[in-house]
Length: 187
Image (cartoon, rainbow, N blue to C red; front, top):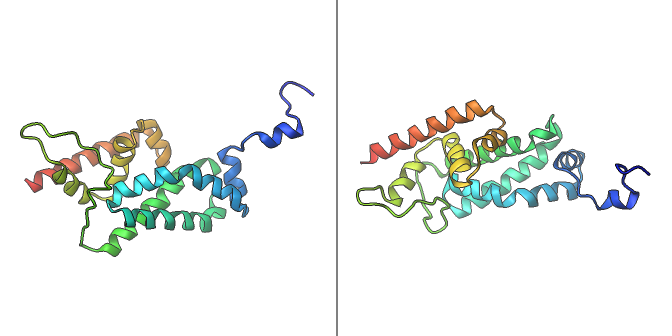
């Protein structure tokens, strides 16, 4: 046996890669899908919470996103794009939750993941930033949450959304400008 070959026992103990898990899950392997869910659940829940700003809605949207992902997974053409595709499914579920909620905006400040530093004299307060964030489009919330709340570098944001880095950079810039406009209209 060469140094690069694994014994049958060693092969069984090596954790499968995400691409392998996605391919197995697409063929109906529940355990493979459960492993994918377990690895992504905390991040997906944080993202939904930052978009929807309501714990119950975030949990519902995340659960619905995973159910939709399970149902639609056999149609995913490229396993390597699973994360970007899953974030899109979650964004769609968040958008649907906001539509169902209608114009009524509930803000659960206790469970909000938005970190705003203590205000300096003359600075905006947390409630103002949260209210402005609520008025942003889902796509703007998503990119701001991924970059600023999840502390992901722009390259990871682009990969997660399945877009080029340059596009992510311009969308992030546009989202920041939209947040500033939303803050200015409050004042």
